[in-house]
Length: 205
Length: 115
Image 1 (cartoon, helix red, strand yellow):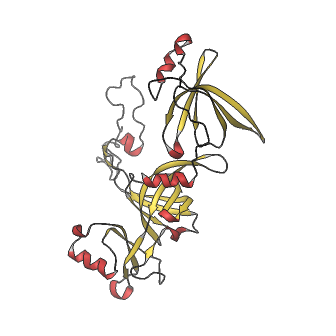
Image 2 (image 1 turned 60 degrees about the horizontal axis):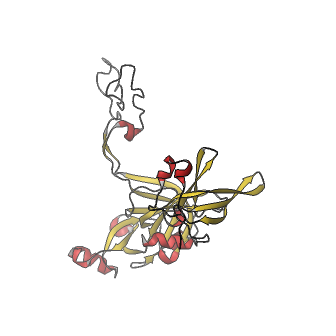
Image 3 (image 1 turned 60 degrees about the vertical axis):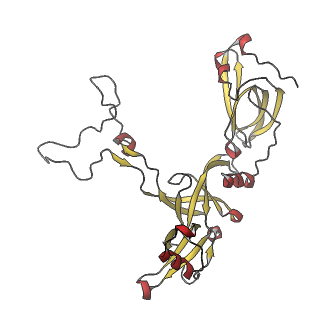
């Protein structure tokens, strides 16, 4: 799918025409440089590799320097492959937020904030015991039973338990586009997107 | 956060209200929609705090209704605020004067600022 690499700037809220206060996320989408075009003949599949955000030349390996030199681009920090561009783009082209100028809804993917090792109440929305009295002692947020007894005599695979939470790829689908500011490559979407401010996002049509 | 300022500018957060700060006594004229009719109501009280910045800035106003304290939080960019009048500039030492909530009667007075 056609898309861009972006960065989360932050959240704010605006009043719409109806006078409702709408939460929105500000995203810096692009400029992205086409760093490689993969073809069926050469790579076995078709895709366009985009690069986003400059990084220091000193921090770039020789192999990667050569890769960027082919596209006549400066070294980039983040590289992501997209499909669906077809013949429209050439090596070294710069894509801006204008790509989305006639879209009303966009999908955003990113890495959610890591929460560390969390219990089932936070991780899966279990309700806990819900009572401090009636014989309860230190089990306010316990998961409860893990299953039956002699049958099956084991815990089923995928049983929801405590563990590492967050820090996984999350998609926010069909977010409304509120505004596009082409001069600064800014995109304002309704609602929230995964990850902390300053994290990379993948925006697709 | 430079890019956030660009967004603020894009949505035109111009300050159309007079300057006011915590401790000031202000009257907020705000529009209320009842069915199709719109009318303006006033809320007069002391500003407890201004919070946030840019598009999401809010301010809290507290007034005494009889002997019950009433607080309202207004977003400063709200299209429902018609106008704000500053009746009194109060002399306070802090930006957030929550201590006012505990005070009643003569103790809840705020000295006026002399320029």
